[in-house]
Image 1 (cartoon, one colour):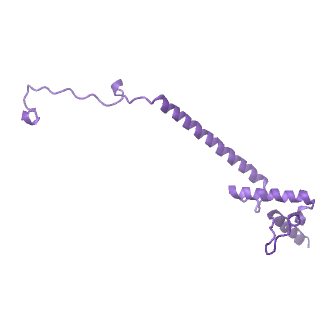
Image 2 (cartoon, rainbow, N blue to C red; image 1 turned 45 degrees about the vertical axis):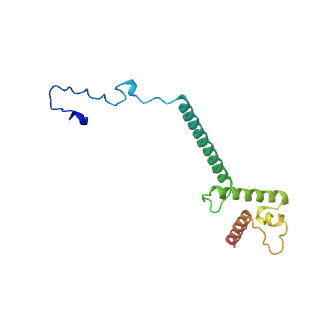
Length: 146
């Protein structure tokens, strides 16, 4: 059977070849996987640094929103605002405070309605959330006095 590439293993004269070496990394330094190149290490360090900067930036933005949420009055007081709601309410609150400064009218008398120009025909005047809240609070206080 030599012609088929098969050997007769039954004869005692044939020597078996030694078993192949184990494929674990500790067996031989030549079988160990190649080390990462310096370029790969540099890319990983850059990637980790970029990720760390992004985490720091995100934490900073979240802290800023948290501080802004604490400064803006909300109804109800414990309401959790989204980021877009926080920004919209902040701009509204700044406009409200500006109206109070410009007109010199106390917040309880709705300075925002007096400060803004008369709307065009068919348009409703914009309602300031903070003036409405002040108005509701004042009405509630008046009802309690009666």
